[in-house]
Image (cartoon, rainbow, N blue to C red; front, side, top):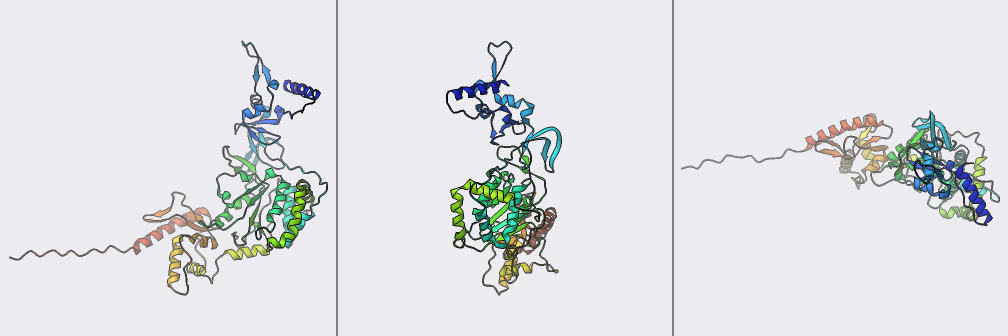
Length: 487
């Protein structure tokens, strides 16, 4: 028996004889030193710790004593130093990877996936849920709530939920949009599901966080994006759709997580995204989309009280047993007919969302965009807001409309409704040619970015030249020389 283990055993025996509480004793093998981050991992709680915190887990009398040459008394070796200097308790990096052991040997994380590297060690932060078989409750009330709220769209969603429980290490190649009036029951469904996958593996974020440089939400089996809406500022709906491709696609195999205070590290790309919204037209989906599964309910809170109130009464009476019941229902649900990487089925809600977000030909904005179409009836691949504003002014002056509803503050809204994504100049704060400037250019969501930048540069040059020609030359009065005085 090692020195520290012997001291711990003797201490526990003494406390037991004295009838005192025996605290949980930790072993050095339960801690790992992360060489990349310069910190320690508690493999039981999955928490990151400083050296001082690690030392505090061990009573001073259990610290190993080492003889020092020329010193009268032996020195005590801090547990943190002992762990750091032992190759068995040292890792090269960390990751988050469902389905893998706590210590992943001979691998390192890369964008292309876990790469073989002999002798390397990765610490896996993933904490698997462990729900026992339920004692009293069953899952019927939760399943009934899903089916009542979303009708024929419910069964496919239940398959998606079962897949994240049965195979959390496998990517689901798509995303889910849950649309219903406020208070109808979306959160009731998702709160139980988050507990099923483990609260450590589920996160809620606002839509704006998708554009943040910090990405801790990539470490999720279930990522809920709360109340997606059509932003009023520069209108980012099409950009949001484009950004979500990373989280709803099978590749890359790993995502780079950037957390405050830590060095970036790779985690497996297994995130399942669920976007909730109260506005059925608040999310941009183009025609031909294959990634998103849309669940739409028209039920109001009053109309769903008959199922949500009994459900919450049962859930609050025994949260753990209800969660365990749902977990085991999903764990044993038959997925023989479910394909996690196929195209997402078309639903009535999805078709309505596609049609409801765009520009309608008989509207004022429809007339504006029709004026910009090419000879073959297609909208330009790239545009600047000034083109929309000038065209809107011309349409208004042409008559037939009571009010010009497009202005500088909302022009981005109509560009995104027409399927355009904002593009910043990669070389400057603005698109600028001489005195002409624009904060954003716009590209169609499916037009390749580098090609769009080239096209926007050419378009900016043309618009600047056109503006220069339209500026009238300053008029100067003709100077007539004065006649000399006559004598």
